[in-house]
Length: 266
Image (tube, rainbow, N blue to C red; front, side, top):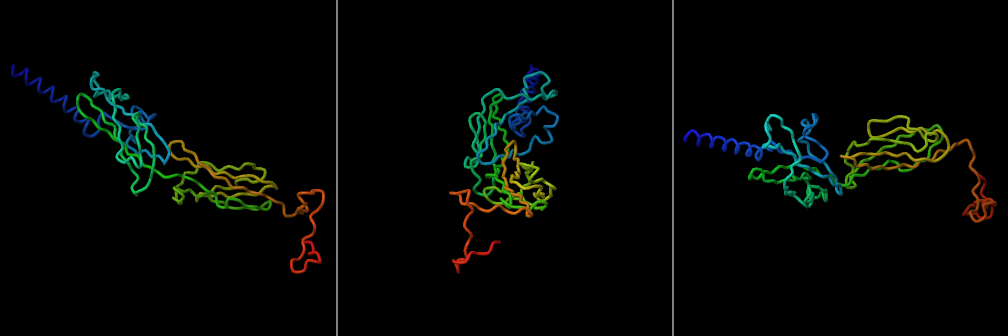
């Protein structure tokens, strides 16, 4: 009888240790962004990475677990989406909110430190288990091109620069994924430079736009454009006409200090 009681007690203690391990270090439960799978070979090296979102962006989370009731669960270690009730909470709802279905949304970045823990709470084998993931919250991300508009002569080169900003302040990010010209026959991108800049080459007269595109995690794209006009300095400019009478040339400009004689043509 004592041996039987000892065996029952040992089994009970083992079950308690298993569940306790899950509750303590997160062993057996993984909270991550939906779409990532803990069973994938490339998951573990980055499985504990923080999730970064920006103000206004939402990302669904998913809780995975090892089903200890399955045979050889401790050996197979196959993670499944947790099927039971999950209670979600954010440690700072002024920065990150979380819905009843586990969707986190960035709502603010004030107050300095912008990392917020989001918790998933479940009861497994009558034990309370809490797993969390760190959410880095960024402000509104924008990019500008400097200068925003320019005029070049045919054959002229010019370097333009992209300035990435967060909440209107330059942040030094390097998120550029693409520079593009609207018309390569007018302006081509001659060289990509290391400091978020490109060198342009004016090819032929015309007007086009140069666009820079940046990408934030996971698939947030934002961009800016620069208007470029190319002229040929060897081609004389046509006379400016009166918009109300386009067939007639505009009267010659007079000297404001001596309005009677016409100003010599330029």
